[in-house]
Length: 469
Ligand code: CO
Image (cartoon, rainbow, N blue to C red; front, side, top):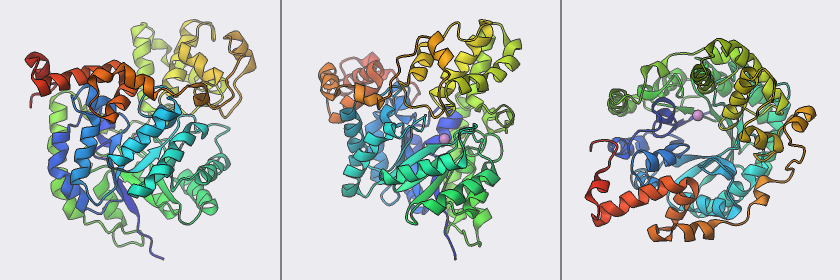
């Protein structure tokens, strides 16, 4: 039976987040939006992740205005976003009222697919966002895509992932995304895992696979996943594809052409679009934002099982301390710390927390003599439940015997009205409160810039653009 494979194009989000610190500007996207809309993609990932932060912090753009503009030009293809569960797009847990308002505003402003994940795969951190997506999606035909972060450990078995998928489906997921942020999922493992997931999920539930090509296995992972019944895969146009970004779109479409998995996408229609983004990539390279090295294969992750970004963090921490010779010891300590902490997946923020603790353990010559505030919070359960049990002796040593066992957000009082009160002098729309809730001072700085520009009250401030126009 012929089974058309669907493609999500990531050129507007993860591609430049992975290769160019999320610095692609809206004006660089605009000329190609109608063409991208005509390709026949399942979705265009274009918002969320780090785009929100980058808009406010570096590009002097209102992220909500960016979304509305994208929606104006992309009429047929759903715009997809990445949402970090109860953290939204920020770095801490928010109260439920803020989460619900954020989801509602995202859908109302044009988001068609919300991919929601939690770094620890604690579904309690997805609960509120998923409820909100399901509450508001009907009016706009949006899709709730719940995510499992893929990782390897003695407790992360196929059975664990399959059960997780089933739980998320029961919680109201339309799609299940398997998110392999570090490109450690291997082709034959992907085949087995997706076969097993397909067996328990409803036939209408789509499986969406996300990987990168950092270690060079990305295309093979997709191919085996498709043979196992995977419905949708994430690709990035070749101008910003491969390496730390997603496997490239065009070769993948060519690979499937004429087979039972044919995507139906006309590869020739992609050529002019890719030519445009090649120029954008050149601009980013010229500005020193895109380092061509990100396109090379890096097998370190396959060997050390630590994501590329985490390895470079470790190296820079050791370099600062003048202890680069301890790198091997630190790499060996990472799996130990991870075991002690109950095997968190290594994704932001847990990758940084575990990595920093491994460095401290080695440099102090004593394990857990010093711990970071974040490591303590992780061990206490403030980020969510850990799948393995944290080590009892270590909990005692670092003073974490009193642990959080409820859903972390149950401990947070409603906070939307408080945020609204704090930023009221800059209020122009409900979305401003949400920008402020997530990025406080960074949002205020943007509001000041916007005010100056609109009212022309401070010509100097209004001119403060990061890039020449
Ligand atoms: Co990614």
